[in-house]
Image (tube, rainbow, N blue to C red; front, top):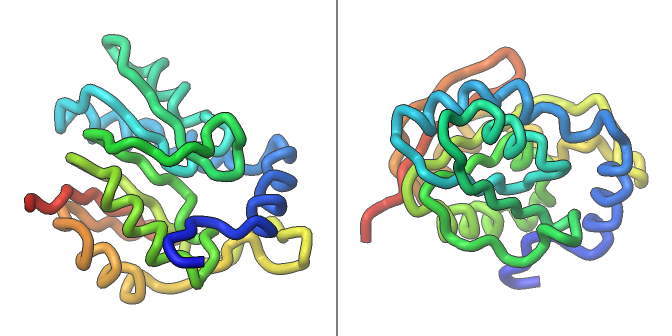
Length: 177
């Protein structure tokens, strides 16, 4: 499964979870933060990586002073499952803790590939309220920031790190070649 971002079985489980209207709502609470960082960095486009139902992109469009292109990538959503194209600003909100543990490095490598400017990524470090169809907690990776940060630092320049009650968020920049 070299280079894979998601297994077929897990894709089916995620598709099932996405049928729940209450699944994938966390991105909305981060929309003001993403909009603020986009404005501060003068971002002109957004890739919502792990877009789910596309709520973040819609919220950003609603907040923007001028129209901004929003691109979506989510391997569990058929219309957004094509490989993501590089983008100047990438948001990955409430996604990484859901990744299959043996594929997290592949996903982080892919985030590095698509993040051409700034990235804002959130990670919930504890258990989710929802379970997968096989009984596992929906947060497959429940690790502290000390586990995550080296993975980010290997791939990005860290601009900002912020703890939150249930995890943290980082702002990163693409490394210059």
